[in-house]
Length: 300
Image 1 (cartoon, rainbow, N blue to C red):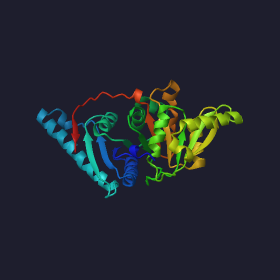
Image 2 (image 1 turned 180 degrees about the vertical axis):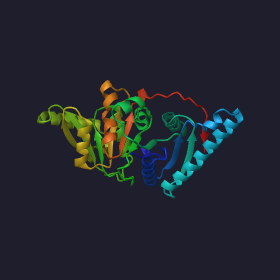
Image 3 (image 1 turned 120 degrees about the horizontal axis):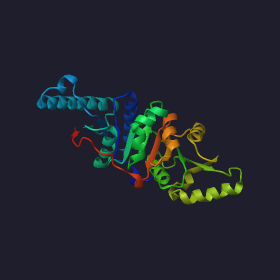
Image 4 (image 1 turned 45 degrees about the vertical axis):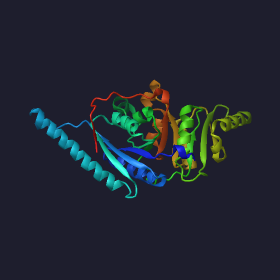
């Protein structure tokens, strides 16, 4: 366990849905165990009712302030309902798009981890409108844990399943995940795809490569699982069914092929199809800031 990577501030975006409430409860349990602080965020382009649109600018301003004030009250109540009383938290309402708000707030606040719920989208709908969670996973400069409603909200991490890609993203994700576990001895299952799965020499070479890749303090806790050819979302989830991890750890490549745009990257599809929380880390070289349409931030 790397104490330097244990988050002290966890950002938790919400849209007041039950899936988001579940993610807040997960983040609360995690924060309680890690002695961390929560920042609960709600973002929206606040639009006044139709009858205010044709009125004077002063009335429009009052209406907008009223909407933001109501959102702050609702967010405070939402947080109090889902966060353990022992966990310190703040709330923030931001007048902009959710993705922009999440990425900008993570930077401005110094959050070391984002925990958020996800609604999986597939096919044309995801191609057109995208998923907020998936977009954050690809662009965030800090680790993101995506929590589905079907997963536990206990926040316990006693076993990790990590896809090994020998990339900076994968090693960073593994280091961050190892800092979140319940105990220093928590096992780590490493999933590696190779072509010559039945060749003992290929297996031996892979063991040597893995020993050189894994941080020295984690080597003794790692167990290698080999799958043939390319690691797919389905093979990752199949291994999860066998090993029963509390957290799946993946890199989140910002650059995607056309097929991945249509079907989703392995990280996106594992997040969509699986029930286990998924931790991703994006490549720092590809981090970008989405242009902010509304510069004003309404902070609670």
